[in-house]
Amino acid sequence: MNKLSLDGTLWLASDIHLGEHIPRTRQAFYAFLDSARAQANALILVGDIFDFWAGDDIALKSPEPWLQEALGQLEKTATRIPLYLMHGNRDFLIRHKLAQQINATLLADMVVIESAAGPIRLSHGDEYCTDDPGYLRFRKIVHNRFIQATFLALPRRLRHRIANHIRNKSKNSHQYKNNAMMDVSAAAIEQAFLENTQVHTLIHGHTHKPGHHTSTLHGNIVERWVLPDWEYDREPVRGGYIEIKKNGVCLHRFDWPASP
Image (cartoon, rainbow, N blue to C red):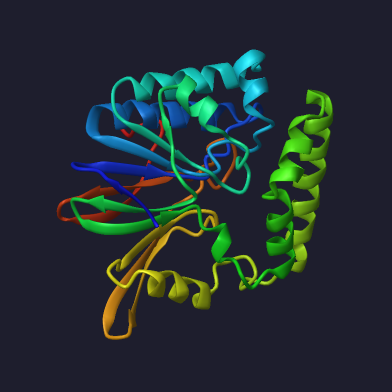
């Protein structure tokens, strides 16, 4: 498994879903980046940074104003502290070319962080939703290299039409899924810990169900931390991040605008 050693204070966030029509969420996220630059030694964005990624070529050659601003904020952050990006289920088409352009590092889809708090397994989390076979089939299709190359060869307008169709279909399907299908599988989480028995902490996003879960597996206490999603344009307002320091892991809410 891919490993990354990072010292000091680490901040992690995911599921911001940056896009054109969420101006307050974007501003809240930029305020978060300001705080990260001042207080963290490194920042890891654990997938679904963007609501959809149509391809590095569009972002680098002709980005929409909101996207140009977002990339500028990320680049500004990367000039101050190390910035790491991970794929989500919405922005899995981000490539190293984009990361290099903004001075960030694109990580593998699963990585073990050797941190001040010990080893931590990190991934976006959608691969653990094994109780939803329909989504797993879709995930397998869109992660196929041939399918991706075909999609990225399409005109920009057609890519966006396909993306909107997929998003709408996904939203409509949620009403037919129970809570188990919308969350990670206990069996998948157990398997993740068994793949590396030296790692007792797992952090992921994706489910939009932030929290801290502990259990015992083969005599070891293991813990799973779930990152929150971000929403500041409509109720309920929410957003937050995880901080990793020598004394452990902590889940924080990000208040914006900041309380007086």
